[in-house]
Image (tube, rainbow, N blue to C red; front, side, top):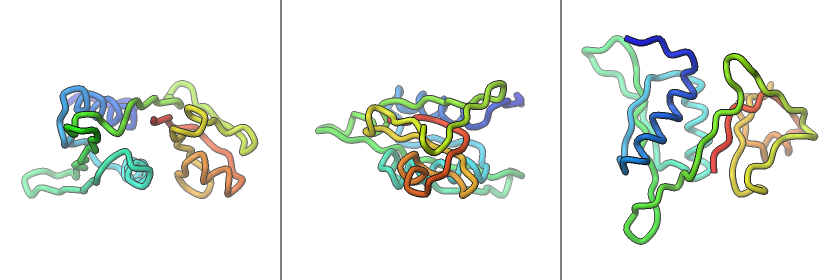
Length: 137
C-alpha cells in the first residue's frame, strides 16, 4: 500500500478521474476532514451525496461519493474543476478581508477557519480568515 502524502489532493484526483470516465460513484479512504469538505460540496450542489461505509472484512472506513451530473443526457459534471491550493510544503493563508473569490463568485473556495471548514462566502459573513484549502467550480 502506498503512503499518501496529501489525502485531500488524493480525493480530488480520484474525483477528477471518475468525472473524466463518467463514473457516477467513487470510493476514497475516510477522514473527518474529507467528510466536512464533502458536506460543503453537497450543500453547494457539486455532488449528489456521500456515504461512510465500513465493511466487515476491512479494518478501515471508506467514503462512497455519488457524483452529480446535469445537462440533457446527464453527461456534464456539476464539477468543472477542482484545484488544491494549500499543499503540505506550502500552506496558503488569507485574512478575512482578502479571502479569494473563485470565478467572480460563481465557484467556491474552501477555507479552514477557527470555526471549522467554511466556504469563502460563509467565512466573509463570519468575518474570519484561515487556510485556503481548495477552489471548486
